[in-house]
Amino acid sequence: MPEVNCPKCSSKMGVDWRRNNTLTHFFYSCPSCELESQIEVEDFLEKKIQEILGIKSEKLEESIKKGNTKFFISMGIPTLLFKKETGNLESGTVIYLSDEIEVIRGFPKIRRTLLLGPSLKNHFHDLIAVEEKMNGYNVRIASINCSDICQNFSKNPESNSKGFDESNEDIKHNKIVALTRGGYICPFTTKKAQELMNLDDFFADNPELVICGEMVGTDNPYVSQYYPEIGKLAFRAFDIRHKLSNEPLSIDAKRKLLKQYNLPAVRLFGIFSADDAHEKILELTKEIGLEHREGVVMKHPSMEIPPLKYTSSQAHDREIKYAFNFPFDFGRAFFFSRVIREGFQAYEMEDSPEELQKRAQRLGESIIYPMMDIIKQINDGEPAVEDTTINVDSKKEAEEFVRHLHDLGVSAMLIEYNDGNAVIRRMYNSTTDKIKNYLNGGLY
Image (cartoon, rainbow, N blue to C red; front, side, top):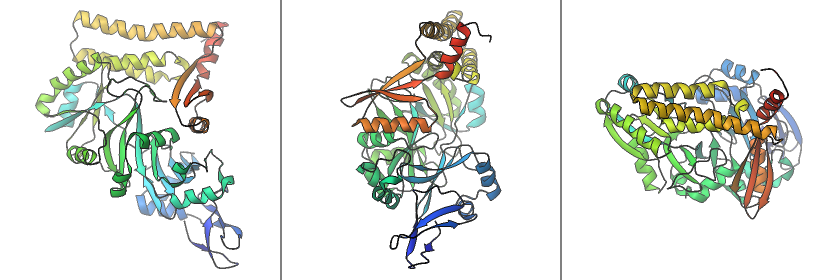
């Protein structure tokens, strides 16, 4: 932020983050004489961001006007969030505003291959590293320079407008945060990541890096899946990237660094030549599917080429089955894309008539059975809801997580808290309302 001296006593004034600041107007307060004033800093942030990231000011202004760039306070930290791709910035990019402007780039979208053979031939030229794609939620863990701001919030409890808990020492003084794919700090994941792993040494030595990975397990509040080696909850890293440039470390450098700090990584199945990889990955995907796991991510060992992903038939069916429990809360593209994947995979794997029949039966059952169940449930007067149990230290933490879900646009509520176990109920209102309407004779 630009430096401002108090006109009354000449002391250095600080931004008052309790007030409704914007990108061009900031409220300052003097710590000495408590004078308050509103300062207009026209184009200050635009110029700073253009200087740091190389994004054109007109692109930023357009994004702000369209509502694709959001300015808010996240767990006590003034934040600029890019909800959609803007210029060269990925969606989910966040800029933290303190004495220094700090950037954490969004995780880049990984393209999917439908036919492995031609895709591998066109995309990779020599070697292909194959890592496991696990079924959880994408998390970026980083250390951010927010201690001064957090301490300021702790001195001003009334600044808590978004559920910031000024009594929580971990939030006030710990700079390590976990961001969801969309760029929001998740209070549950931030705390759990630090309980599951010792991250202090890594970020003390590597503050410019971001650990990208998957939070997985049955106590996962976003995507719950059982893994024998995981159990309730764990984190598995799949990338390490530089904050500002988003450049990834090579496969070898990443795995060595994670091993050095005893941080867990996803499985590396091997590094194969491009000529041999096709059949090996197809066979590997079949094995993964039979184990009820998700799929693989194919990367060049140097990470100079964007990775590709490929998933198992069982993963497609599982996602379709889940979504048809709440069919009107998921877009048609969600269902269509997974059916398309199945068609191309059956073609490339050259399913026998018996295998093709099994695939078709799995797919059909993933559609019809959950649809029948949810229609009957709503006809019996029960709404479409999903209950998830998370383990937290206090009811206040559970309520904070619910507020986080509300910030994401999710309709959710805390329905039970007992001895550290909090039951969070998510409401699927579109499915409830539309099925009710059709059951009462409404037209489709």
